[in-house]
Structure formats: C-alpha cells, structure tokens
Image (cartoon, rainbow, N blue to C red; front, side):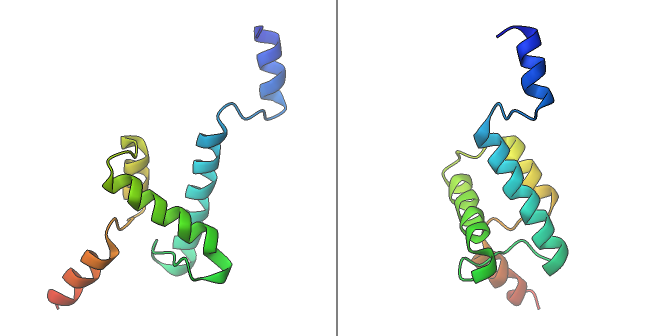
Length: 96
C-alpha cells in the first residue's frame, strides 16, 4: 500500500490488527469493571459480564500455558490482576 492509502485508512480509524484491538478493548472493559467493583475477578456466571468473565478465564489459561505475551502480562499486573484466584483466596485466609 502506498503511504497515501495507509494515511487514508488511518484517518478513518482502520484497525490493522483486529486481535490486538479486541484484546485492548477487553482490557479496557476489565479496567472499568475493576473501578466499579474493586477487583478483577469477573465471574463467568455474572449475566452482565459473562463475556468479560470468559475473557479473564482465557487470560489465566494463556498465562499458565506460557502463551501470553510479556506486554499483556505487564498490563494485567499493573491493575492488580490475580492469576490464580483460588491460591490467592487460600493465602488471604491463611494469613488472617
């Protein structure tokens, strides 16, 4: 593509990488959820946040498989994302 066409596409908000764009949108939704609820542990059973809860579950799964990029791990860590909620809860109660 010529630089003019790239510029035209950029000016109209063309999304070059739909996967990265989707991940960023979900991350933004998680940040909003955290602001509202004080945590990032979105339940898949929460009717209003079912998709976000599934997205959170997938991030934990990718992390455990070591297939989540370091940039994404860093972003999630920056908002206090809990990678293993069961371990976190156990430690929290054990330390009380």
